[in-house]
Image 1 (cartoon, rainbow, N blue to C red):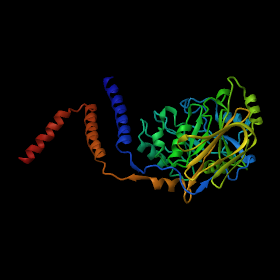
Image 2: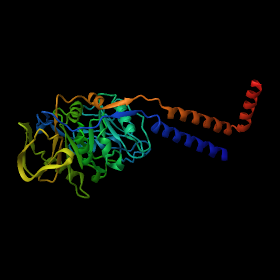
Image 3: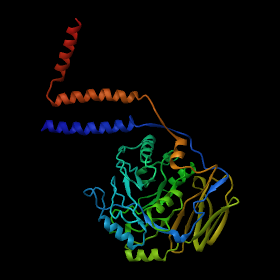
Image 4: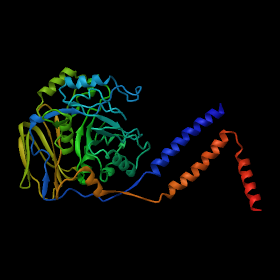
Length: 415
């Protein structure tokens, strides 16, 4: 019995030791350039061609009962599709942990998805448009290099959309991290478990072209309080998956923060959605000014700039015009309609020449460093000798006598 216990303990310790070494010794090291804010004479406006009729609701983050209950999810994939269909959503991905759920993949609105990550700090990523699952993860609290290495691996598929999930949950992503990290497209700014707006402002203030996403992150599809609270409006005229993904990458999406009452039924939610109005009519930038018009009077409007500082606020208005001087890096707008629904827009941002792709931008700021990993070599030498001793111990071989015999043979050979 002691031998079995010893064997199991040895296996567990060996696995943990290897995971620690893999994460803190063998993980590639990156050089990060110091961040700088957006600047330039040109302005990127993701809503330049805005048309409210093209916008449809989407939820990209949900879990059903999967993996023997390890996902803490209720219901099956069909339940999730049915529920969001009834609420009038055009897109609703099922994002199981480390698994692409193919339910209803023949539907033109189907978007493949999975939630990457099984570490203790919940530094998770939502991968949309994925064709395969990346199994590599670092399970212990992650360093900046760990996080960048995982994002770099995920970004090898240039056709996917990479979203940082709930950054503020368990401090999965510290604000300081977001000043330097690259190789992702969006941030889950609104989630029932974490409001990460300040994290988003940190990334934007560091000149990172990162757009917003809002999701229910539902684990119990039958619980009215978990469904229809946060969603993303995407520009997809034909309600097909490619349009939705392009909308996320281009920044034309809009986040909805929907107020709810305890015990609110699905029928009540459906009615609320049917009666809701996006209200935004246009957002234009011209002659260093930003002009926003609404189709109805909105309760309040707030505009935020560099470092998340509020630069404008007003109540009960149907539009406003605001100077956007050359020194301003970005402006992002939030507004609340008469029904209490809050809308968050992506920022207008300044740039010099052109806004490059995810990969080309990252390669300008992040560089993987090749190093002579003496610590890794030393670890392998020590660990391999330790493993040899343990194996011999398990085989009931007297380690001392073996080394004694080896020494005597070497000594006799020399003499």
